[in-house]
Amino acid sequence: MAVRPIRLFGDPVLRTPSAPVDVVDDGIRALVRDLLDSVEPAGRAGVAAPQIGVGLRAFSYNIDGDIGYVLNPVLEVSGDPEPVGEGCLSVPGLWHDAIRHPHAKVTGIDLDGNEIVLEGDGLLAQALQHECDHLDGKLYLDRLPAETRRQAMREIRESSWF
Image (tube, rainbow, N blue to C red; front, side, top):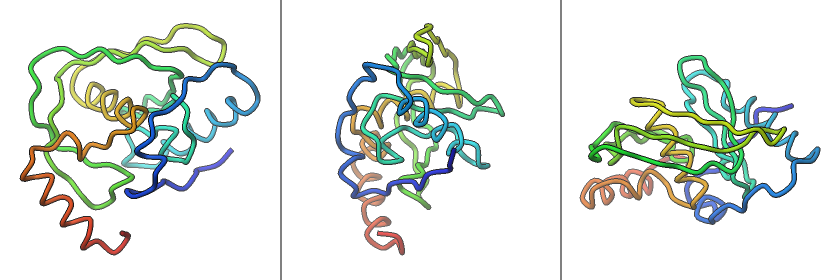
């Protein structure tokens, strides 16, 4: 369908917890197509529905060329949290070490109601946590140590897009 514009830091949809997808209809199918189109451009590991202005629990991912989506994801994490370099399409130009677990698993459904399970380490684990945070109304900035977060907020205030 379309690569949708990414909502930027300051947009209230990014701080609002998303509602579950209750019924898969034409609107949800169109949302999934837009999420898949929106995650395809180079450099994108994931796009959550709130990032394109939709407050529903859905995201797309693009990890090493493997592109897909999940509706109503439930996240499980394991391992000791550690700092990992991270950025966000909704906070362009910033890159900081966010605190993430080394392993993550997401269970959700596809458009036909079939169970989807994504599980892994590294970039996949980081992306699953990042996208699920978006669905909970959180940004990666919330995962930064206090001093780093203050620095990131300064960078945002001084950015050309804010």
